[in-house]
Amino acid sequence: MANIKSQKKRIITAEKARKRNKAVRSELKTYVKKVHAAVESGDKEAAQLAANAAGRKLDKAAAKGIIHKNQAAERKSGIQHLVNGME
Image (cartoon, rainbow, N blue to C red; front, side):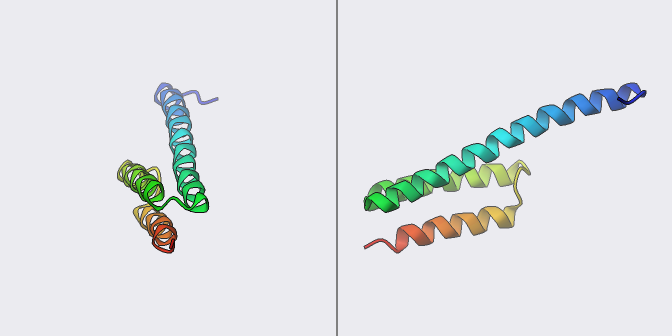
């Protein structure tokens, strides 16, 4: 444990941020899984709605610095490619 008061505060703050970031990343995975499930079920409209929701969440996470903006773009592109590939 640190001896400096500001560093003790920083450790607590960093831990809160780590937990919040982990929760957001987990939520992102859930939204992407919903897209995959909709694609597998063959419901294009539901898949597109799920992709839109996942895209918004990915953009928000990128804006907050939880994931890199390029990673958000890659993931959005990937899920949209799945939806567009449906017949």
